[in-house]
Amino acid sequence: QRIGVVAESTAGETRVAATPSTVRGILALGYEVVVESGAGEASGFTDRAYAEAGAETGDAWAADVVLKVNAPSTAELARLRDGATLIGLLAPAQRPELLAALAARPVTALALDAVPRISRAQSMDVLSSMANIAGYRAVIEAAHVFGRFFTGQVTAAGKVPPAKVLVAGVGVAGLAAIGAASSLGAVVRATDPRPEVADQVRSLGGEYLAVDVAQEASTDGYARATSADYDRAAAELYHAQARDVDIVVTTALIPGRPAPRLLTAADVAAMKPGSVIVDMAAAQGGNVEGTVAGRTVVTGNGVTVIGYTDLASRLPAQASQLFGTNLVNLLKLLTPGRDGRLTLDFEDVVQRAVTVARAGEVTWPPPPVAVS
Ligand code: NAD
Image (cartoon, rainbow, N blue to C red):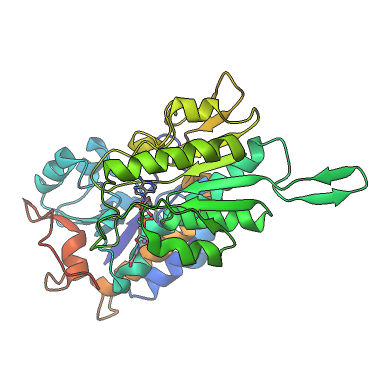
């Protein structure tokens, strides 16, 4: 079968679903690969580099399997041929109309953002690989705007104190932010309602700030909404930290809900001039009062609030490489014969979970699975 790598049409998207090196991985599974001309341009991969890896340049939408980063537009969907399989980020929970449009065609749609959170599927989990990049980039954005060093120094021109960074929410993105900020030499603190993250914070050189109000334990690795008691105690912690720290990176999300509000306008007003906030939850409504999704805002007291929603796309070559590798790992699972033929086994929980539309039917959400 032929696998097509199409160009992204979403404004501001710089990633591509396969790089020349992941094309080699796809070819090794027995497929032919056709790349749309210019598909890799924004991430620095030329048509020639794909050709050298063994891909053809041509009409990637006519392929048997189409690889894409973002969900297709209506016009793009019409270009899929009957019987084709589309693989990409399809936001099944947020886009019922897209699922219906996919099911209206005789095609199969696999959502990369529906990979279940089990150890076996980790190598295919694009949400984690993109969150890791975004967390790193959030710190780089903050460092770029912040007018000082992150690291402390004693120089002939005087003593420079280290910057203090608070990371709120210690999932994949939060851990990457802690690692990046502490490797730049900052003093890093982090908080999360899940106390089990404390050791991970410390292992990356950070200090874990506990909110001492017991939370209902999570059963699937995701956070639950916090209690009113927890939120009151956390609000005190944020208010005290806001006065002290230079940089705040917020990453708090609760699946299926708007992002929890962590910092109020009063907290932001209490921060020192020149401080920087990166609100990584901006696309889900923001963790910080006053964040504008996709924009940078400077408050009256001189605090820069960054609400970029494309942090992973700001490191396009790296993001495409990891995205493409996650896709090759999924294709390995779907090509048990290594014979260039994609098969779909609904008995396998990973394959069942990612299939959101098939043969005219919406197949999302999948039946619940036990977590390993
Ligand atoms: P996420 O993006 O859903 O949420 C980010 C963080 O926000 C979480 O740590 C959450 O606890 C935190 N949060 C929620 N409410 C908060 C509040 N009020 N205040 C502060 N923080 C709040 O999480 P994620 O990055 O997807 O990862 C969550 C966990 O799942 C991590 O422990 C991660 O290691 C694990 N994980 C496992 C797998 C796997 O096994 N395949 C894959 C990915 C992640």
